[in-house]
Amino acid sequence: MSLPQRKIIHCDCDCFYASVEMRDDPRLRGLPLAVGGQAHQRGVIATCNYEARKFGVRSAMPTAQAIKRCPDLIVLPPNMEKYRVASRSIMHIYRDYTDLVEPLSLDEAYLDVSHSPQHQGSATRIAQEIRARIAAEVGITASAGVAPNKFLAKIASDWNKPDGMYVILPHQVADFVATLAVDRLFGVGKVTATRLHALGIHTCQDLLGWSLPDLLQQFGKLGSSLYSLSRGIDQRAVEPSSERKSVSVEETYTQDLPNLAACVAELPALYAALVKQTTRTQTQDHIHKLSIKIRFRDFKQTTVECRGATLDQEKFAELIGIGYQRRQLPVRLLGIGIGIAEKPRRSQLDLFEGEETEQD
Image (cartoon, rainbow, N blue to C red; front, side, top):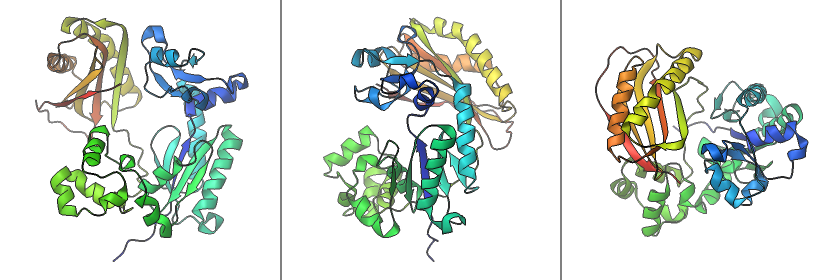
């Protein structure tokens, strides 16, 4: 029995924070603009407009590096309350068309309009109207993708950015996916892309020659995803739940923390900030995991987690100690956080997990 055909829209506002700033100060339009931390505070770029991107500036780039690439870059500090006000207006517009809205960030969401009566059920015309309303009511531009599933809708929304839209009709799926680079598939990062390329796999068309057992043997669980996505198959439903999955706080330090003792000395301030966050979000009674994040001087990053049902400063200190021992280098960023369970859990296990990554 085949599943009913879905009509999925992925909407994403263009350089959201920067767009709100340009809306509120038109003098910034046409100038390279970024929102993020200041260079002297070792900040990073949260987002930037397209004028800045022409110079190679991008999100998550250290601000100092961004300014080297674009000496005339204007860097504004984030004004989160202003962005949240805009976000509420955007989400209200989305929900005028369907209750099946899955927010991904303040401005980005999947919408399932399969059963929407508006515009005679045309997902394309609904997406066009949503974009027009965001421009008129919020004062910024948005891009949209329309497709039979979430994977393709997400890809499509990036196709004609900024301020554009792309539609993939059901009969176009096979041809569209065939030419898609495997780098664009969910779960394919730099390491996996390199492995795929080494096997002569560059596009989804190349993947079609691989059987499911062969892909599972080569890539484990990811092989199943590669097999389905390369055929344009994605059966994930739009999940309207907006339940918070985690709460965390972190700090990038102006001067590297030289040793473990210096890291632990910063913990009380981070812990107080996390307590404040969990109280504000009313999540302190739904904790099931504690976690820490350390980014070292060489930009390699490690995380450590343990199960836990309550905030525990001593446990965070223990996790920091475990993470620090992995590299024993000066630390540029320290973060602590919690994972939130669907229901409160009372058990606590000393099961430590974590991974080490590298960020540029």
